[in-house]
Image (cartoon, rainbow over all chains, first blue to last red; front, side, top):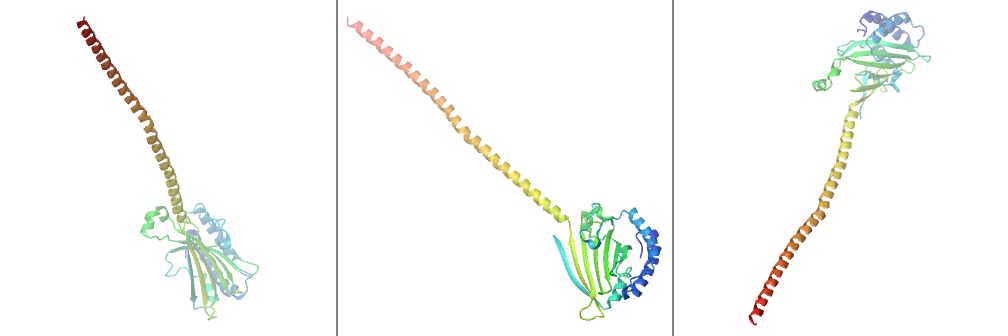
Length: 76
Length: 218
């Protein structure tokens, strides 16, 4: 699957692979500590957050799980 | 006015398989409309829950009549956020998904709860609720309100116009009689004068005749 930032797709796939392994083998079995993917995640996030800003995707200020969410004035 | 959807689905796989598959479901043969997928936030809470926010880009497929009505929306893909909480201790997952653009046209919100199937612990059930809303409903209500307000204002003008013209028509009647009376009086005066003149003439004639008769007897 592609990332919204074309340059981030490889970083995304690398991170996803790491996460999926940790999620199934550790997290779901009750071991939520020691996330081995933090570095990969950091690199991936730097790239994708930049792409999001460039494309002006309005993800800012939206409360988690949508409670009391704001509707962006710039929505087309 | 919101359209509400309620549904339930069952997956014949265990909850941990379903939760793992949740992160790997794109791409698949049925997701050609999903263009991009990104995790934009993720954290493990102190109580061992996984919070994630996923950003999806999807194609904006509309029927042709909608494309004609909303040409500005056609060019833009839809951005969707999917927030999720995975709780492995309780074997449940909750998701909330909604679109963050095209919102003035339509907002679709979906809330899902994934849990172990009540009949078969090897299966997973999904409780799904959705709300479809559009601010165009507000626009049509505003148009109606404006139409009614303008109509009421015109009714007031209609009644004032009626009262005006009625007063005008009823006001002209008395002033018309005065003119007639003046005319009639003028006519009457003329007749009287004429009659008086005739009488005077007659009297004069009579007097003249009497004088002639008197002269004859001498």
